[in-house]
Figure (tube, rainbow, N blue to C red):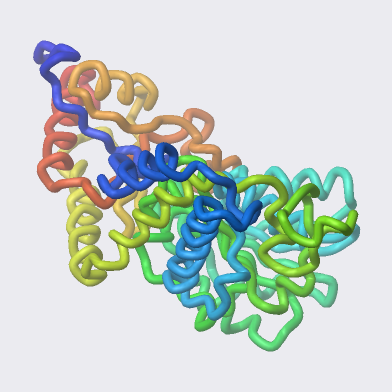
Length: 393
């Protein structure tokens, strides 16, 4: 194997955007620094000038998010510290004791673990719909599990392991007119793919801000349809800056879900990132993403002993190596080539049973907004060199 580049002269190739996007647009860092140094006030906690500036930043970010997902009411968009807390708020806010919930085998532990807790401690019934060998779920199989007691269908828009995009709109269409709520985890798609809550029949849309949506770490959102907001219960209690004379939480959004001070510094960065995303040409961004995804799909075609698992349109692919631990390959890519990818189960507890990738998991490569074809080509050359060295195949 060629000599490893030193830390001083090697170029970092970051290919773990499914975990968090990096780097952010420069405007994100500038907005956070400007707010922290020049404003620094809490939102919803005062009428003086800097507090009003904080209020407007939060309101602007709500409006941008509502437009991004075609939601008619920005006030029904609540902020959270990440996608996990947003999913927890959704699940614990609408699921009650003895209810029936449908989810799938592709889900992240940020959804599976709260649902499992409710099974263990609140006696809910949970149906888990299987997926195929690439992480795709049949919409009819999901809707076929509906019962009169089903309060929630919860599904990821795309698998974080294979990138397989689910037909959430088909599920929402088949559910339309019923009383069951539809929760969509858009962690891997917000900012990368078009999302239309109204057309898709999505009642609750949860997502982090720090992946494709160009925000910093520490940001997340939950958007609620009118009927979901009417059923929602708060799960965190405290000050909201409104109706302070009452000991009960507000019943109106977004205060019902936003106890305590918001991370306005991070929200200022997210607002700036969303503004950059809004002015970019969506079709051009989609073309770039398609090229990266296509190159990733073909990157192992000439390497023996490597199997690729991918869902198609998103730039996410998982690799499995014959008789070689994926963690070893990830370490070699990092230490010898400066290429950062993730190995393991990716916090997805169930999907590996269907992919045949347990117990070690996969080597996941995930591109983002700034990923270049040259970086993917350099990854391919590195994998070929590692395969030769380890005598795969």
